[in-house]
Amino acid sequence: MTITTLLRGVDEHGAGYRVRLRFPGRTRPHTETGFRTPDAANARVLELRALRDAGLTPAAAPVEITLHRAADALLARKRTTVSRKTKRRLRQSGIDWWERALRPWREGEFAELPLSLLRRDRVEDAILQRMLAAPKSGRDELDALKATLRHAGGRGARFDLALLEIERPALTPRKRIVLNVAELELLAESAPVYARQMLLFKGTVGNRIGELFTLTDDRVDLAGAAVFIPAELNKEGVDKWIELTIEEVTLLREQLLARAAGSSHVFPTKTGLTWAGRYGEFHKLVWAKACRRAAATWREDQDLPEDAQTPFDDLEPHDLRATAATLMRDAGFSREQAAARLGHADSGKLLDRIYDQGDRRARMRKAIDALAPAGLRATLAEPAPRRSITPAAALRRGAERLTT
Image 1: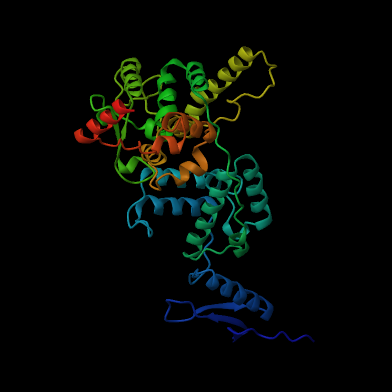
Image 2 (image 1 turned 45 degrees about the vertical axis):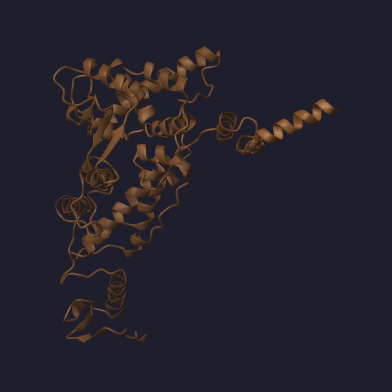
């Protein structure tokens, strides 16, 4: 007969076995009874230890909950409570992020499964497949799943703790695509008429797409050549004014006259509604259409086959932010000036590393030709001082010339 050694925290209790384990913050040990075999009790105490090591606390009795209900509970918390990090409620952009990241767990193939039935291998395979199609979204969704499980675990739900050990895949930064002026204009010309000014504006100002979707009349100062983006509508979380060029002010004037009647948004949909919350529709009705048409025109102009690569093939809306950054630097804006206009708070480090894709040798040649065409020594050399001659010395020299 094999005798099973009882682990620490397990003891005999009545006709079966009991598990007792202390958790931080609790005055009394967490206790569970009714285990018929020592192996079952030992297995449970190991689960509880892992739960404690993960910083979670079990309820008095296990709670059975489906994944979609757990995700809904986390989302409700995010919408209503104060962030531990910022000590403020989440802005709408933060809530939008959680809604996107939680969508597969609220609506996907695992949504109706109880947390206790989620298997690491199936979930991990699904996340890896998602990463192949959309790396950033896949990683965000994994983070949201782990947050859901931790939140549910803190309320007593049981799940396989191995799910929290799924590794967060590293992302290979995508190199931004940058259009030149002619390509930017071709993209805008290829878009539906009501969206052309928005693409041109984004391609030189560099606003995030959400800032343009939510831009309203009251935050446009045409006389002062600037637009205002409040803290709650931008990623930096601070109020910012963006100064505009004459060209951009002209675009705004044209847009305000051409947009759908009755709209208070500067860049609305064809019927005057806001694009906010309709990014998928924008991508389908405006962006994908503009890229497809621009690519076809570009191939035709270059006399290239239909499968030839173009600058528009993998273009994303955020690439117009990189386009604006590069055009500003090519035009002579300093790194700090371009970063401030984009709203970066790091004085240009992110701009240099990701957004600016310009020809830096060409810029340097332009700067040399403009600032030091004859060289630095020639440009900075002090002119030789002219020797002064007193009247007496001048008369003496003249007399010397006459006698010789």
